[in-house]
Image 1 (tube, rainbow, N blue to C red):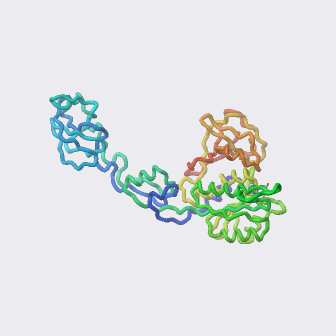
Image 2: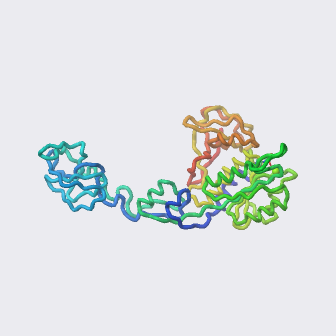
Image 3: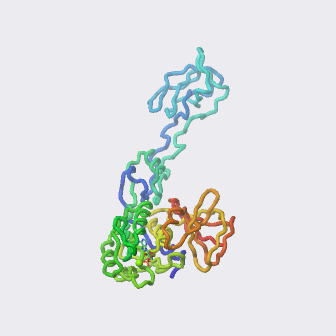
Length: 405
Ligand code: AMP
Ligand code: MG
């Protein structure tokens, strides 16, 4: 048995990123960059106007100018600005030679004599300087960044069409249990629906993987072995059920028979002690417990960490949010305990109802806290480390995730 910290350390030091592929930026959303991308040119590419106004010289402060034909954004103009002679210019248009500033239309007055300018003109006013946004050579995307809409805006603004990305890890999910039926089958009164497999498929997709569902296995060595053999081309195999000490718990045994090397077996955690991580060849394996809530919280800590590493993310560690606890929490001490809860502007509170075998708390939970064994009571107002479920944000370095009082 390992501690949560040891289990996470083992994952982070052993799981390596999958191979890469090249995709057009339009298809890169949610993937992870496998290379640094640098700016090819300055942005803006040229000094340009920040306002609709007049490009003028400072010598004309307080004076009247005669405007030349308007320069629009996108125009190639060779107009020159001289004393007494300004140019009407639209936002985004190239600043003409000789101009010191742009005076917004609303700061000028038009009369028969021409355009009246304000008394003071500040050099550079309303001019967006070449390179002030991004300098040529600057890093705009880092290897390991998750590509989001704003990474795509960086790339597009530089005319970058393709980039090298880590391919999506392939995850195979299956559940074991004689009692399980799929949601599209009928169930007898003594049977239940397999909710874990659809959950982990959906969650793996949310976290940027390609997921395959291969069914439910019976509680026999043969059935589980067959399923494992058919899944060994995946980067990660996620199973649930059959990992404790019950008479029908064969999951781990079947993996061992097929040569699983163990990274850790059992974690000092409540709920979810039987969680085991290992590998066969290039496929990582996580065996989660069958109880849905126990399986889900262990998925969030361990499977998610494996996925972040497989994806090549540069912020692969859990990023706790320090917040306050809104209500008293009493905990049975002696174990590292995970508690699901809700989080908002005012802080964190645990869900009133959460048993390891439940399904319903998961839809309400924003995340959880991990409480140390000696912590028995967390009074309202105490600082807690909230571990979000629905935020993509990870940490570049390993941080303590525990709440202790
Ligand atoms: P096990 O770990 O196989 O002993 O299962 C523990 C509990 O979780 C039992 O009550 C199972 O019926 C239940 N369970 C196991 N697998 C699933 C699943 N895929 N979906 C929902 N409940 C499950
Ligand atoms: Mg079972």
